[in-house]
Length: 246
Image (cartoon, rainbow, N blue to C red; front, side, top):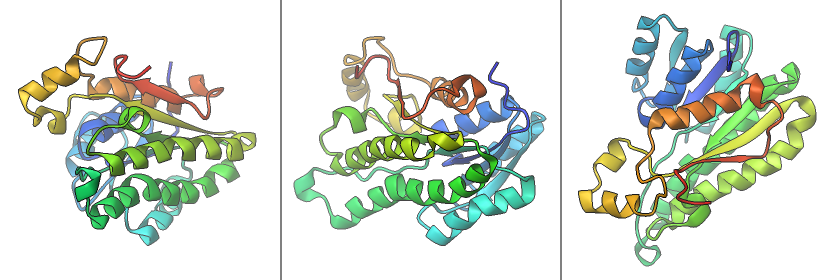
């Protein structure tokens, strides 16, 4: 079940948190994983995967570097012969109330969270169209569905991913390519652990399941959408949020 043997997957933002968990889960299911992050930040992830006997390589990639993003899928195909799965996970926050938000903070979040997905998906589609198959998965957020004060830039970028995926899913379905979105809720990561305890309690009160999610639970959703078992699912938003938004 969820056998990804022979598949090649590119995961952005793979150095830690959700991205690292997704890379680990895909590799564990047999995929060759290209773990992308800035500089050498994905090295620890890849070293752990190789030590566990999986197939993986690190890719130094700045998702705001359009030229590097456009070249990455072709380079992967040149090395591995194909590209089957693209997981666009890289993202940043620059939180501030709108009245105080700087234009640079708006532009940076949209460039990293939304425009980068457009650039990379467009480049990845070329080999996928030739293969007549592929999986494109964008990692959005519950904030893109329900909003959150102080995160207009982040919410706009994550909501944009949902619209982007639904439109692209209609464009490429006839070629066997599916495009889906994962929308995590409050997930236990380095970022959420840094939030004050009271804030964590306040967030937890909004979650019917009564707890934060784990990165492994998000990774399991990504693995499913990347697999043949999800071949009849496209244009879908898979919420991993404990019921926080229904």
